[in-house]
Length: 310
Image 1 (tube, rainbow, N blue to C red):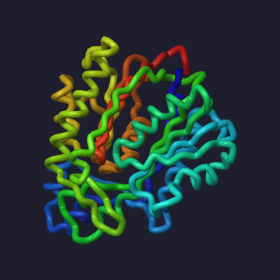
Image 2 (image 1 turned 135 degrees about the horizontal axis):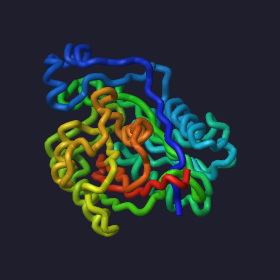
Image 3 (image 1 turned 180 degrees about the vertical axis):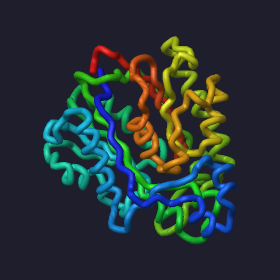
Image 4 (image 1 turned 90 degrees about the horizontal axis):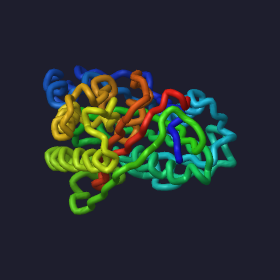
């Protein structure tokens, strides 16, 4: 058994509005808002690394959970924008947090990485005890790598989110998950070192709008939960229009999908955990996490909040 015990986030100070982005892309600010739902995003300082942001989000999650870094048995760090081929950021995050006893593992997956890492944490928790899951992305340098493609460059921001998964206690029990992978269209969303991001937006949206609702429906059906009974859907914040498509296909109103993309843009794998750290609703009842990302990888996770186990 595994429980969610606390969340944390880190967002850089610099706020970049659509006016600034539009000037670079020779586009209209209103067009950016209409196509993506984004109004602002955060950009990290030049000296602010993926590991630094990850560690700060991790500290907040530990504090919110009442867990010391010395209690961790495992740290999982998801990122698709690490500054180097190896080592990944996980070992540096372990060092920055002061948790030498914890195993540190990287999950190098963009967008869907936090969801896959949470599933791994649930599997590891019976042995590791307390697991810190962190997702951190520094997407702004990638988005701004020439030649700029306005449909892509406008989307991305920087940040980190984190959660603590505990085998013994928490406010929401991780019930089950439904994950999927399909490499047949992997080249449609890729990032090569030193190159701008390549994204076939139409192909990505088409796959995400089909695969995510299917995963959610399969998961909820397996546990006899009706979609309208879900308290909230906490999803990777890719695009406001995509969230609306997934909500419609799932059979619920878009208001059931928490969204903060207007403020932060698409922070890749960090976005789902940032959203979870900000959602203010009560955690009792069924709650669904969901994500879609490069690979393609996608999935959904069902958690059940309990007022009495906090």
